[in-house]
Image (tube, rainbow, N blue to C red; front, side, top):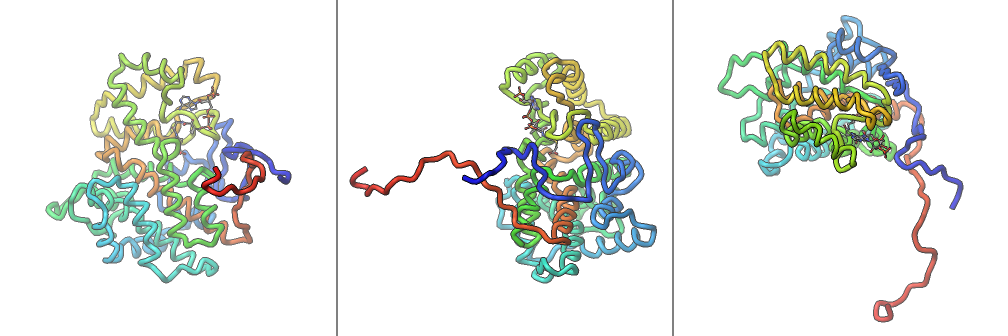
Length: 389
Ligand code: CMC
């Protein structure tokens, strides 16, 4: 069968070299291009982080301005894309709509599809970063039957997303709450990249065949959807709903320990210590709830779960800590984002990470990703006609 390393789940396999993101899971360290995530979340805005991930360095003031303008230039969607939405059922999950619309973009944007051409790759990367908030917000508007709001390029990236989500043509003077815009920007930054996670590896794998970038990002969105990955933020809120109140926490924990259910928002393949993104997320969560004067019983429930889990032998022995998704759902809920949109927001924010990895892969020689297997099926045998079986 050949001499293959058997590594299901890629627990011990580095699939590529990368200069984008560094993680030390034992120490709880996450760096983008060398910069710690907490510094980026506090001091940079999301588009600066996008520039950093795409180009390798932080922009100076002039480069930042130019990049912002470039992104703003590409926020609109082709009119035919707007019609494409109408093919979906109104009760579709917005992630299903995202997979479909992003996967279809290559049918609308034919120019820029030569993956060997650096100029084409660059324009597609910008288009994706610029259009993904519009695609995401419209996925929501479509499912609630409201008219699509066109992007407003006088607003920041996060403000514009919230505007397209919540404004209607009737609110001409719709104002985005700056506290919410800041929290949204921070959520985008905290989700921007995370090295070779399942969805990014999917993007690289699809990209290694030479597939067009829109198809690759659609593959990433599909991989992100699962509850073990980006779908966890939605699953956390569902879990909190199911538990209901603090009195039921102990009983729920027993179910977790009997392995009947997982504590969603806990555990990580790489972090065997506190997820550094979760620390910033928790702080943002406190800020948002305080600023909005929200006293959310689900937050009290989440805090109780966290407290019990962090002091429980089961979790300690297995190094299970809250991950980024444990707190993001509570903030998104406070902002007014419906649960079905949580994973869409993760996808929106991660698009820049996916496309940065896709660009990195295409900037040097690469091989098609083609794992082997250990075959465990039948040995060779002769075909028997159907009437003799
Ligand atoms: N609740 C209860 N037990 C858990 C959990 C959890 N959330 N996560 C892991 N375990 C247990 C697991 O049963 C196993 O126990 P044992 O050693 O007795 O068999 C042990 O901990 C190791 O877990 P694993 O499943 O081997 O770990 P993994 O690296 O394969 O899986 C994970 C990582 C994130 C898929 C998993 O921890 C999980 O499903 N967590 C809940 C879903 C979640 O929050 N996902 C979001 C991840 S962060 C956002 C992102 O980047 O996508």
